[in-house]
Structures are given as C-alpha cells and as structure tokens.
Image (tube, rainbow, N blue to C red):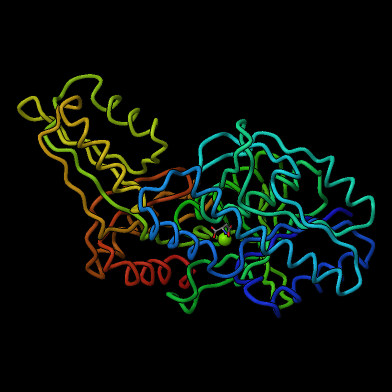
Length: 402
Ligand code: ASP
Ligand code: MG
C-alpha cells in the first residue's frame, strides 16, 4: 500500500516529537508499505517567521514572505528524514521545487495546478521513506509560493491524489473532528465519520482541524481522509463522500472569530454597484462571505459583508481608494464580530433548524446581526464577546439533547 501521512506543527515541535513521527513512519514502512510524509513547520515557526518579517518590513512583498515562510517546512522534513535514518531506515526529504509541485502565482494563497509524481515514485521504489515539505509550491516564474496558513493538509491531499495513494492520514494534536471545540464545549463528541460537504462547511467556518482547500480537493479527487492524533492510538474521524453511521441532524457547531464586518453606507441604488465592489475585491483575492443589502431609500442603499479579520486592512484600503467609483458616502467596519454556525447534512430534509437556532440564541440573550444559510448550514454573525455562550447553548440544543 502507498500511504500519505501528514503531521502538523505541534506533532514535530521538538526532537522528541520528531522521533515520534519518525518511529510511526518506520513502523508503517516495516509493514511493507510505501510511505510519503508531509510535514508542517515545527511548532510556532511560521508565526515566528511572520513576526520576523513584520519587524524588518511591515509591507514586505508577498513573494519575499513566501520565500521566508517556506523555510520552516524545509527544517522539519530534513530533520525528520535524518531521524528515520538514525533509526536505520533510508529516507529523503524533498521540497516543492524538487518534487515539482506547480501552483498558481498568487503568493501567500497559491493553489495547486499540477504535481509531478515521478521523483517521489523513484525515491519510494528505491526503498526510502519520502518526506515532503507541506504548505508550498512553485509557480511559473520558478518562485516559491505558499498555500495559505494551514496549507500542509492540502499538500497531503494533493499528493495522495497525484500518487493514487491507498490512504491519506492527517495527524494532529486532536484525535479527530468534534461536534464543537472541546475547549469551549466539554461535552463535545468525536465524530466517527463526516461527509466532505459537512467537513468543508466546518473547515471554512472555523473548525481548525483541516484546511478547507484540502477538503475541497479530497472531494474532487475522492481521496478518503482520516484525521487522527499523532500522540495517541485512537480511531480518529473518517472524512468521506457518504456517511451512514451518524444520522445526526446537526453534526457540528463552529465559531470563527477571524471575522470582520464592513458596511458601505449610502451607495447609489442603481445597477452595477455590487458588481463594482465585489469584482474589485475579488481581483485582490479577498474572500467575501455573508453579504447583505438593505432596501433602497431616497435612491440610496447600504451594502454590508464580512471578510476575514486578517483581510480587513487591505479591504478597507481598496474601498477607501475607490469610494468615489462605488458612490459610497462612508465606510464602516467592526472587527469585534464572529460567525457561529451549525452544520449538518440532515438539515436538507428537516425544516425548523434555523428557527430553533434563533430561539436558542434569543433565550441566552444573543443578538443576531446577520444570517446566512446553505443546504447544510446556518450561520449567524454575532458579537465576538457572545461566542462561547452561543456555541454552548446551540450545542446543548442540537447535539446534547439529541
Ligand atoms: N506551517 C504552515 C502554517 O502554520 C502550514 C501548516 O502548518 O499547515 O500555516
Ligand atoms: Mg492545521
């Protein structure tokens, strides 16, 4: 069998953990399997590198940032490879360039286009465990790109698809996907299985277990994922197309504090304004989430929407620069907001989840500022200060009562 394993930053944070990873890979190898291992940077390395860059030049070009951030993963893969060899098993570390993992050119948020499997296959066939840097690729200018924070999961899935791997295992410091963040909700339960669509909603809504693009890719290429603990031997959560075991109405409650709300006040109530605003942001690669447009009055209207807090500064700059073109009277923003969502495939066939959720929030005195829904998700935007209270109450209603 060919197995792709991915270990996150906390799983390779120090010498002892690196040896733990090496040992697990060696065990797999000794069963007669081919093992490809994707690693994140050690511990908080990526944060530290980001801080170093900000200290030198807060406006550093994204190309240079990617060049810097990509070094973290090179450290962990080379050390892990050395650890394997000291355990007596041949290993090799490869970076994105050496593998030839081609991405789009957008620095800091690149997407895979094509992955060459030749080099990895060659190394596997010569009997080595292959360690590959997560989180990065190379673009058409032969520059290093990164995939966005948490992107190593996506590397693992992309490699599993390119190599037609028999399994793709994502090892983290939690032992699976939970119905809510166990630090906030002590009664949260571990899910045995979750569908791609549910996981996709949860990942993009703040359940930080998996990078959302990794789930997108897994769905597209039908790569079944398992999320497990790197430190304990527990079954973990399987992410796959259809789930039958957990027939829960709601499979997860998520919160995302990395959310800011922007309101563009007093734009002209005429065709083309929304197009101008959102195409401008799209060109800058800014992802917009919940959008709300007020009913026009005196030929004017307001448009509000949410973006990631981390994109707030850039969004406001773009909007202020183009205030005239989008006919805005003024632009307001609020970073003290968060999204709380319930996700569940069962919602497709069950009415009333939304009203139940609003009732629960009303009962605990939480004010809803915006609402957005999909087939399998209901999201409310609330004050950041209310998040834990809201998550606990909603979880108690939909999951603990069930
Ligand atoms: N090291 C990168 C980060 O911290 C990528 C990853 O860990 O997945 O975002
Ligand atoms: Mg991660």
